[in-house]
Image (cartoon, rainbow, N blue to C red; front, top):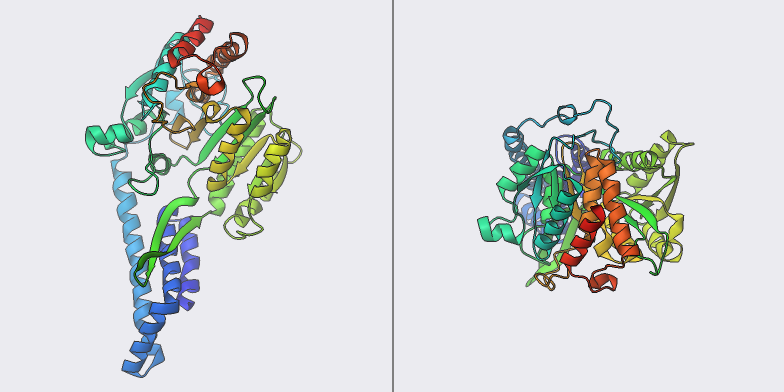
Length: 457
C-alpha cells in the first residue's frame, strides 16, 4: 500500500506533463490494481518470500521491483505513442495562413480565427458514416450547395463502412485527411456495445486534441413540452471516465469478478474547458455559466473541476455570472425549470448524459448538433447515432447535421451563411409545416431537403 500512495502522486503530475491523460490513467490504474490485488495475492507473495528469506524487508524488494518495472513500461508505451505520431504529422497550417480577410470577425466558437472567402473554397473532410449517415450527409451537402458552399470536400470513410473497405474503422487515410484540412463534417458512426472496437468518436477526439464539445439546443418546433428553450452545453471531451482504461480482476473461476475503470480530470484540462465556456458565453451574448459537478461524492475527480470553475469565474466577474450545481440536481432542475440555465459546462461523462437530456427538451436527438473543437482541428457532427433500423427507408431527419453545418459555418467565420441556413430551417418547420416522422410529420428526407433548398432560393 505504501508503494500505491508514493507512486500515484507523480503519475498525477505526469498526466499534465509528459504523459497523455490516457497513458497516465493506465499507470494510475496499474497502481490501483496492485493495491486491490495487495489484499490477496500480494499478501500471499509477501508471506512466501518472508518464509523463504526470514526477512520482511527482503520480501518487499520484489514488489518494489515490479512497480518500478510497471512505471518503466508505461513511460516506454508513452514514448512509442507520442514520438512516431509527432514525427509523422505535417506542420499544421496556422490560422493566419487560412485567413482571406484581414478585418474578418472572429468565430462564434472561441479558439479559432479561421476565415475564408466564398470565392475560395476551403478544404474539408467529409465522412458519410454508417446507417442513416450517408442519407443525412447527402442532404447536408445538397443544401450547402444551394446555399453557396464554401467547402471543397475530401470524402473519407469511418466506422463499419471503413471496415468493409479497409478492415479498419478509422483508416490512416481518414486521419491524414483531417490533419491536412483541419476541418471535418461527420455522419454518425456505429460503435459496438459491450465489445468490438473502441469508440471512433473518442479516438478522433484524442487524436486531434478536440478538448471542447459544444452542444446547443433550442426550441424549433412549436407545441412541444417546452417552449423557448435556448441552452448551450459545453462538455470536456478528453478526460474523465472516458479515457476508457478499463480492466477486470479475476477471482476464483470468474474472470470478470471485479471491473475497474480509471477516471482522470486535470487542473489544466479543467481550466481549458471552463475558460472556453466563459469565452463562448461572452462572445455569444450569454449571461451565465453553470459549472456542473459531483464534488460532494467524487471529491477529487470532480472537486478539482469545481475548484477551477470558481478560479476562472473571478476573471469574468461583472461580465458573466457563475453558479455551480450537483449533476443529479441539475438533471432534475432541467425538467422542472430549464429556463434558469444559459451555458452549462461540465465533465465528460456528465456532459454526455445531460446533453441527451437537453435534446429531449426540444424534441429529441434529431434536433441536437455537436461541435468538437481543438487547437488544430474541428469536427462537426449530429449527436445522434446511426439508426440502422431506419437506414435506407428515406425517413431520416437530417436536422441535427444541418444545425452542425451551421456551427461549422460560424467556425470558419461565415455567420451570414449560418443565419441563412437557420432561417430557412425555421421557415420550413414553422411556416411550411414540413417535418419528418420523428417530429410528427410525414415528409421524407428528400422532401425535407428540397423544402429547405426552395426556401434558400
